Length: 172
Image (tube, rainbow, N blue to C red):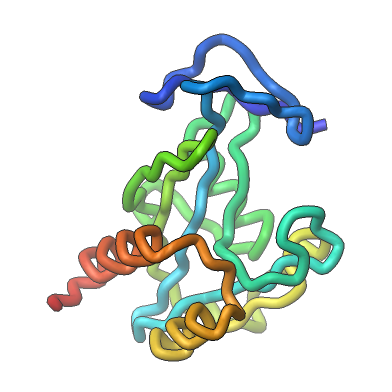
């Protein structure tokens, strides 16, 4: 059973843990979640479809990532999730934190990596990822609009795309 650190609103551990699936966080208590956005030098997004066997959001196209396990900081969790789910190695120079979003009982740290890894070089984690592919920004926008990609909310996407554009040097 996966153990999570319980954090305060500032993201600091409060000295307690909780078990995944048995998590009854009180107001003001949070757990850490990471999303990793993978973008090519051509501005394409690497999207992944969750395994059909997942309890939460089975078969949905969604962000790479997951919950930090007890003892992990945000970078360590993002680095682990990226490698476990897709086989993409990263380091502190290539994996960059974009922002933190407070959502219900989670602190969601959004990370970014710019890589041109070929689809056939990916190593998908079978119990997590059913498939992955590169899509253009317009294809990605259409996936969101058509409900094919998990709807994290307009504010989330606006923030993430603004931060990615900054990283990629895109001026709007």
